[in-house]
Image (cartoon, rainbow, N blue to C red; front, side, top):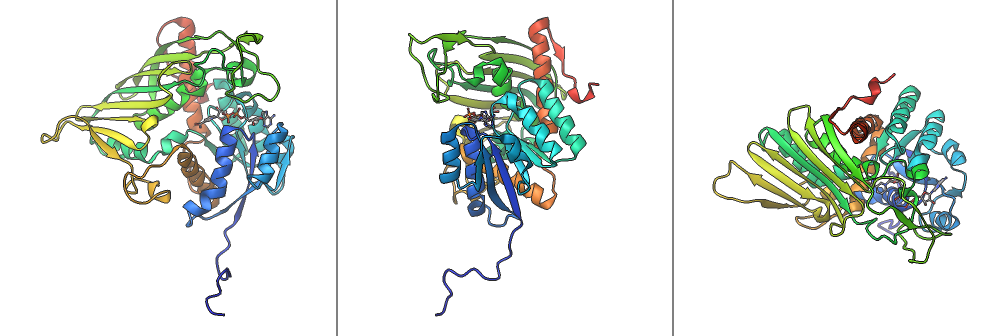
Length: 403
Ligand SMILES: NC(=O)c1ccc[n+]([C@@H]2O[C@H](COP(=O)([O-])OP(=O)(O)OC[C@H]3O[C@@H](n4cnc5c(N)ncnc54)[C@H](O)[C@@H]3O)[C@@H](O)[C@H]2O)c1
């Protein structure tokens, strides 16, 4: 029969990259889906992603890992997953306070490691993770996935090309409703021994990483924090992470901040303001920035991920902001959907990020953001925390300089 339909001959075999995922919650699932679909979005890749082992203490999650995601093996012992011979790269997607021991084990086993932000629950954890990875010589990545939005990459190109002139001011915000219901359960994000810090780690970190990506390093900060909802219903059994309790349920104390804000000065002299909240009512996932230059400005909001607003101070024929729609003309967008103004979404950013990280492992090319970038972010967080205590401006000093 002619055509040989179904036969695959003569195709180059791409080297396998064996993946361990530690924690199959929201982000563990997102990275696992990335691994499954990267081949269809990035056929020119240099590797074959293989879901080797998933570790999670929850039996339902382990069953899903095996039956729905197609992991080769599942386990409730993350240490055995990290050291397995067929694992090349470890994805750390468990609650924050587990990050550092998981990273330590991955470094000891000589595995590349991709950790979800913020890396650990305190600035010291991220610093330790960076030291361990540097000493072990393993490749690292960190999950500041919003930096991979095609329109954010375009915004950065516009800024670097001088389209906005000199940058004079930045507004960063991450306002979310995930904790706005007082009956929302007291899950790991609200507890010191599982999360460490609150929104300054959880979502302000995204805003700081974005500001550093678009404008540059931050030199000094002053800020404040608040816990708006001090008690929440206790989690019982296998209740879902974003589940709610009832007014009759026993309650426990929220141990970290719901809200954080700061003013800053960038190294280049620009000023900045930042706000992050998990209890605000209205903005559902408003991870947003505004960048103001001497010749123009840009505005982006994750809630409208496919739109970038651009004000050109030099174009005298038009006034007001112009909406730039996403499309295949911008980096990576065409890997998901062709044409213009056909939308992409949050998990597509994760897929772009994971493709770039795995491709860098396969080819030996550079990847950023890695653990060094995570330390830059927590260096700002440390200055902010110091400012909560001193109630005054604090210089940002790179934690890598600490003995
Ligand atoms: N990049 C982003 O935009 C983004 C978004 C959400 C969360 N995150 C980060 O991802 C990480 C996980 O957050 P999430 O929202 O996916 O949490 P989640 O609660 O949805 O999932 C956590 C998972 O870890 C598992 N787990 C708990 N203890 C474990 C252990 N000892 N070994 C293995 N697995 C264990 C839980 O059973 C659960 O399946 C956090 O560090 C968070 O900051 C990043």
